[in-house]
Length: 265
Image (tube, rainbow, N blue to C red):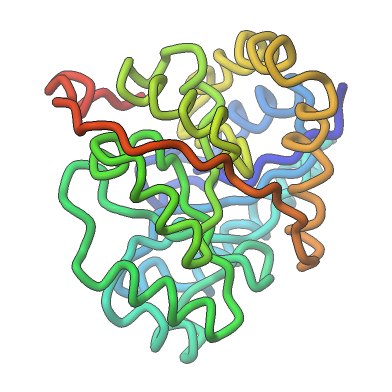
């Protein structure tokens, strides 16, 4: 397969904890193209209106120009990984936040080590009422969701869509993330898969192994859905026909090993 679409990627240079310069961005772009990716949404970390949409759009334009000049077959689209904050809806109204390719789909990052903010559910409801679809990146690494899987179901009922990182299924992100990702897969709560790549040869290394694991358990059609079909619908700002999640009984919270909470690639 080829023509893959990656919805979560930190490929832009010198804007967050991704590549430090254009040369590193180009190396990551070559890795992505070699792995079969055709379209990548640049999603730098944003909070408090920083970096601004103008900065992100300018970096996307500059990177695309370099890719075209060197004939690297990769298309970069604008987006952001917006950290949850109380004034998020107001920032959206003021055009201070980028959605994914200017669609109604917003990538909304939850805190990984701290409890979920008390306003989380109210914010998800308000976003849905305003016509936005919050896409939650790497939920398998969010400790509050690892500790209480029923919260995953509750947030989904409020409108949350989940994007799991490929590397979670191979253990690359630690045992707690792997366990949560497997639970989400069985429960029908894996809606998108993405690399969340920050640097050359990082999470991309897990793609082939993850493809084998998921193709064996879910079949080729699932892979096509995750790599091309569903991401394309999102980028075209079209509705998603997501499967109903499988209801599972509550499980008692289990202590997450401290080292797993700190594990980050």
